[in-house]
Amino acid sequence: MIKKLFKSTFKILIIIIFTFDVNFSQQKINFSGVSGPSNKEQKKMKKTESEWKRTLTPEEYYILRQKGTERAFTGEYDKHFEEGVYACAGCGAELFESGTKYNSGCGWPAFYEAMPGTVEETQDNSYGMRRIEITCSKCDGHLGHVFNDGPKPTGIRYCINSISMDFKPEKNKDQK
Image 1 (cartoon, rainbow, N blue to C red):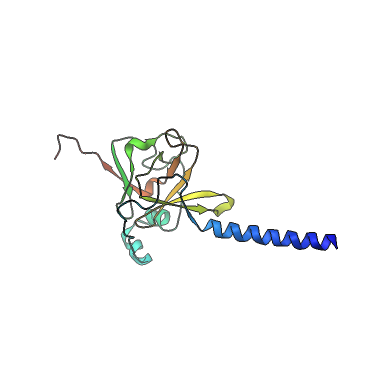
Image 2: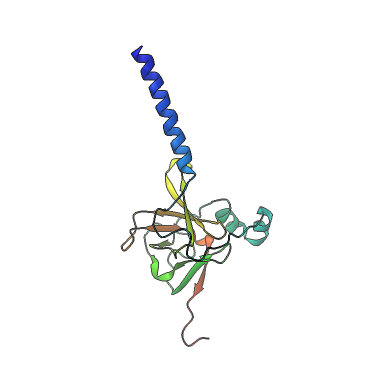
């Protein structure tokens, strides 16, 4: 009798845990405290998959639309430290200021802070890992992941695929 009760309770507990895990893995979350909608609500960019395929290079499509990852230490912006702004390669939305970029040694460009309202964070349980996926809040393009092992002042590390970004250099004051 006790054995039957234990088995039934165990099964119910497993079902509850599984249900919670599945529901949690699909929720938008705010890991860093700075993401999410800004004061000026951005409108989502809507394109069909065929439109994205025509607009993006095959590499950009793989990263931004199919949630791919470029190999570590191969990206154009990993060791790039010029003044300017990093923008989404899919839609041009500005994402990160160069002053927040640092050399984390992880093999991908790393930032300790995103511009407010520019990225969305979602639980990612792919490949047997629990991570937080980062997507562009305007076009939903996959950018990379965020971790809580970054430097001060935030303690956050946005680990971003170079292919998912374009760089807009800061204009000199002499240039107009």
